[in-house]
Image 1 (cartoon, rainbow, N blue to C red):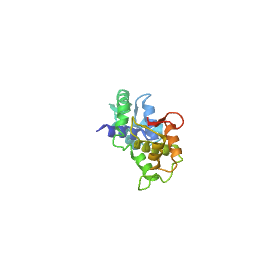
Image 2 (image 1 turned 90 degrees about the vertical axis):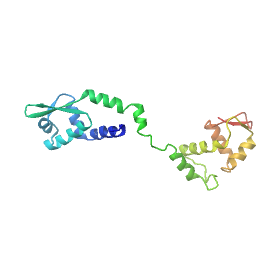
Image 3 (image 1 turned 120 degrees about the horizontal axis):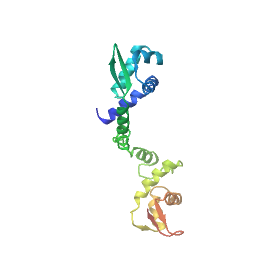
Image 4 (image 1 turned 180 degrees about the vertical axis):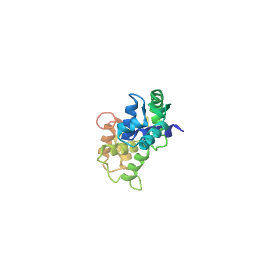
Length: 186
């Protein structure tokens, strides 16, 4: 079982209120199916089903005691499993195949015309930040620009160069020296 499958198995095992009750009871002491059945008010086959799910996830173990199987929470396995699957590396690995630029591309496509200019400047801050990060790529790092040069470049994107300039500086994507001085990409 790969680590994503293990993560899903554990979360699915715990994503049921009856199984959580059973885990809570087993955290106190060992119980038989019949005892758990009476305590959680479920039929023994249903309790056995829940115990099987918890056992598959490595959360409970069973031992024979006379005519009965007695179930207990496997604390060591639970701690080891949660430490392993809930580590920052594991949680990050679960999102490995996600395209982190998809949202930005969607916003850029939604607000851009075929020639690359903007239909409108977004009013919503999160969307505006995406557009600003896109626009600032038109400026070379380490190069200083006059206000006229900045306006020419920004004019390719939208006629309201003043707002774009102010927003780029405000978002700390561009720096500015004095009123009307030089601009540069941060």
